[in-house]
Image 1 (cartoon, rainbow, N blue to C red):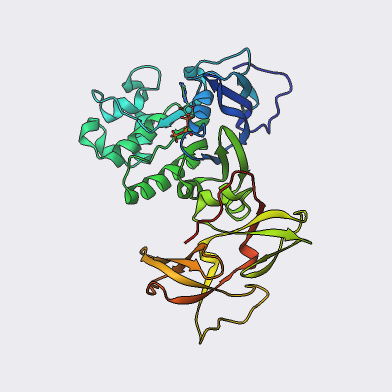
Image 2 (cartoon, rainbow, N blue to C red; image 1 turned 135 degrees about the horizontal axis):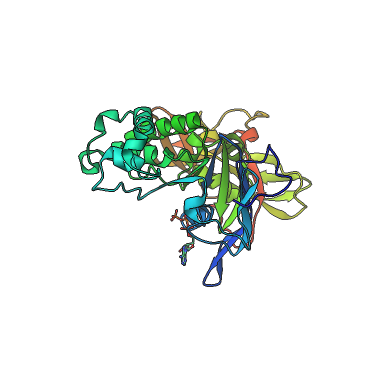
Length: 375
Ligand SMILES: Nc1ncnc2c1ncn2[C@@H]1O[C@H](COP(=O)(O)OP(=O)(O)OP(=O)(O)O)[C@@H](O)[C@H]1O
């Protein structure tokens, strides 16, 4: 590692600044900067192809950036001149195709990244296997283990050299749903106990919300938003960021005097100049449903505004909740509601809908963006 004068004792464990990488003239990682503090989990979250894995590969050192720098505990491991080889970086890797070596036993696999033969590392290997609850498999070979067990051995192997940072690229995607939650939580506990900082790549918002202290949302090679899961979910920077975490409803209107008229009454749209088109975005769980009483709905309230009538298009039971799709009488647009438990009204049932005002996000309409679907 290149040592520099003035390295701060409180430097982040991992710091990435202005990282850029192009392939065939296309920037797939574009000026990416973020930090991972010691002992914390940061998730790079984004759709397929947005540059998450490439970012991870640059940090691992298996690929080289065109520009930018990477520091660990304040010390440069890669910049425009210097490139520390991957095996010298204090970084552990767990990738999707985490394949264990089939001809080595579980213990030999775990000892693989340590210098010298297994007999010199028996204590450390035992400690790691006990931590992942796999000591009884010590002498076995990978083909004798289930997917989840192999995953745990892979974690023990990655942890063996005591990496300061663990890079994980969709490491749980090969596991079935129930096993995944279990392995995910156990892995996180172990990584925290070991004091490793984690950078996890995933395209699944649920996984990021479950694991991350901080989420860095990526799109088109750039980080578009960073923050704690709660903040990213509840204060998305734009419509796409809101829509990445759940279905969303979108109502369009034109702002006049910081107000926008909609079928649900007027919405406050401060900061949007007169005559700009805006989108009012909210999640399906914030669309409230009331029964039709002789052609009337509930009275308007400050929290829910004015009710608007919709006809049920279809309703589906999803297990813990029901998803009801409406066609709005006012303009034929479609809205979705999520209702806890079982609620399966017949198609064409008229119902009244209101929107939780404090759960709405207002964004300017960008050129080329699609309008909400119509029924
Ligand atoms: N070695 C390469 N040569 C050319 N293009 C590449 C190379 N590696 C990645 N790319 C391209 O860079 C873009 C980003 O790829 P990357 O694997 O980083 O995305 P990702 O966000 O991890 O996606 P996924 O979730 O599907 O793995 C993609 O369009 C990919 O085709």
